[in-house]
Length: 124
Image (cartoon, rainbow, N blue to C red; front, side, top):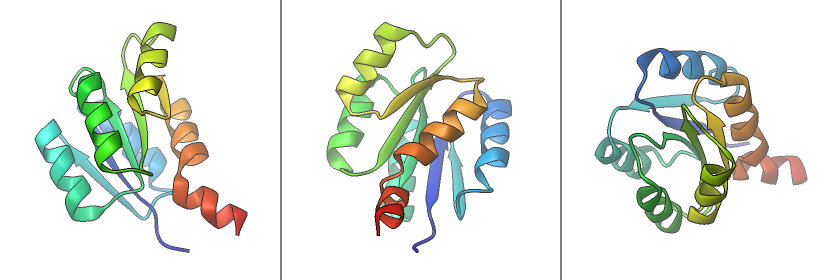
């Protein structure tokens, strides 16, 4: 099975560290970035299977563009005030889930549940 990788774009450094700490048990490589430009560069360079994207940094238009450009990549969006309207809009834009920024457990669960590579390896 190919090692899985994830890129994190989070505004809060504490959240990013907590996510990296939790995700390190499931992913071979974790890349933390601080801007949409860095996110795009990391995706192009490392080809991660998952991106965890803070919607306060990357607007839905950017989530939609990334989803179209990098088909098959799991995009889990986070927001400090995630609600049902935001969830619906993000899924329409191509995200696989939206979780509150501080809910590390939900974010990890979403990345594992929707990871395309993991789903293929389980199905094989």
